[in-house]
Image (cartoon, rainbow, N blue to C red; front, side, top):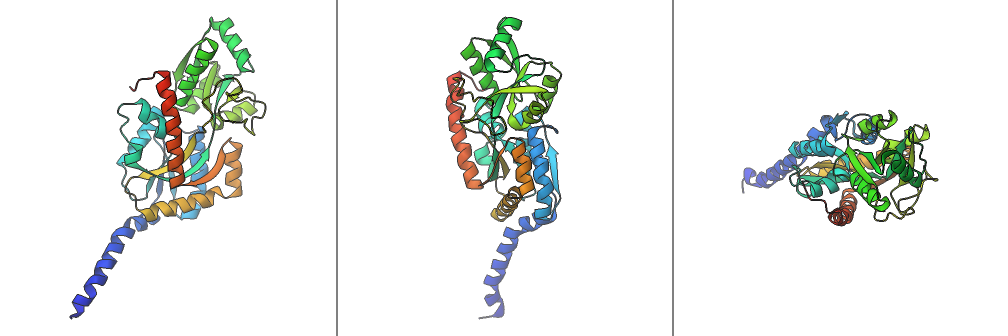
Length: 325
């Protein structure tokens, strides 16, 4: 047996390892692009920047927040699908882009189950109903009375994106209280918040992270929250279930996704880094103060949560009579 014959299996093994580890090696030397589907200044963007600031130290690479705002995260999701699966591009997003848009759009331009792979879950959160500072109401009953007196039962309610959980919630509230409430969609929570603070719109539905600072400052007032229990940061604010509006108990989530085909080693490296970042006391405190339920979820756990949430909202969307557009 010749020397070349003996070495051939070893060379094949080395070549296979190079092919496998090559993308990971490149990922370790290049900036990580963290896609965000909403504008700077909103809740999702704030979370991304908190994570990016710490991830750069843990990974030893620059981490660049890349805002691709528009269409409720759809533009960023399409960018993730088109990105090379080399571990250099990931997407921080929440339930709307992953669980809702694929149900309300006939052609969203991506399929989360086929085009993405879950890396890790970051946190859960709740959506809430808030009124602007120029609205005298400080409870749901007072808001209902105000709409009836001021608008003859008609009112506009801001939502961060069309065909979203907040929009379906507006529809349910209108039905319960016999009001003609119209959802006014925005391109994210930040521009909606600007109009609420300017009293251009009397009410809005957004995530607690989007609302909490202005609620604390008295510039707007949260009057109801989703979830099965009251929020620690808003102990005086009732849940929708307490108001007789059930079906909104399942909590939405934030997660990080990579393009399908990303090497397992790169996924595990990033998931491990995220777990370490979320365990840092200052990170946990900052995210908790924003109204998030901070907690690392593995990729498999995030996938399970995504599937459960999607099933709940599939039933609610069908019950509303909404037809995919």
